[in-house]
Length: 157
Image 1 (tube, rainbow, N blue to C red):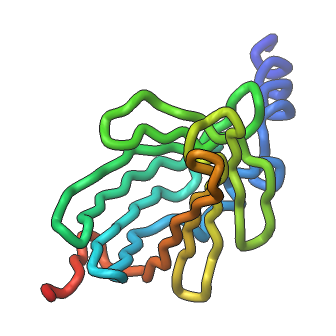
Image 2 (image 1 turned 180 degrees about the vertical axis):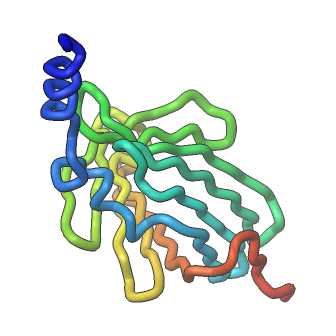
């Protein structure tokens, strides 16, 4: 019968969805597509499970150059973090610094660019923004994604 107290203790220390900030990011889950400015960018995010979300992005520049990144959002020693591996580079972690009902901001002041990543629910869409400085000049890039069926592509130009 000593298993019962151990199980009860484990259940009491496990984060509930109300305590799990990643669970509050369910509005990010799905397949998202941005066809603006001659580019094609898609992001796919899993739903939150046990404090973890997993995502990936594929992009084609206006000239057709491909890019990709793998990412996940999970607890770390510094708090929930967005960990990204762009185009095969080493992973970089951005710690959650702000969270609201329909937005989240992750920051890493030590990264060269970007230093902030923001996602925001936008009706049926998803906005993403990265910002920071390059050579002392403020820079940012924004995307406005629409929810689409998995693997939908942008129309041919």
